[in-house]
Image (cartoon, rainbow, N blue to C red; front, side, top):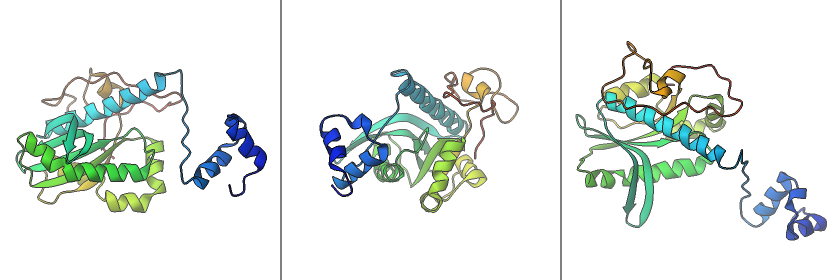
Length: 238
């Protein structure tokens, strides 16, 4: 292996990889045309549970907002089309304009290439999935939803040109389209901030007069990651 000492290779073969640096392990994987992936566990399964709850909270926020704007929503839609299997976080249909919306919800971006390819594949198969539900879409829009936090924004910023090409619509232009879908399908990124009141299922709903939108369902408790000291915020679009 290029630029690898014999002692480092020997330690790895003997199962003593904990004595090697991450950079060294990445070089070993690269030399084998592979990729080294590492993860941090926090209190066993607690971290996975927190991430799942944050994902569920984001899905709930999006479904509630889209429902209040006249969309028909289905969450965690599984599919098997021509041997391609998977699930769509949120599949939404707007009866008034026959617009179909494929929503991918992420708490963070791990692999940008996988994220882009996955959403593209789901958007390609979505019309067939929608037809099975009795929906007859005329256009397919794509939406990537992320929490309005510094880490996801920084991850998107690192590949700003790539994401600008794949998801050019943001902010007010995006929410305007979601409220009143036009003939032209869009592809955009929606940053949502989950505030304490909005996520808890009680109290006021951010936006408007504080009343819960018609069709919205209760929300799960807010989940904060360790070290996240951001002050409570209202649900808003980015």
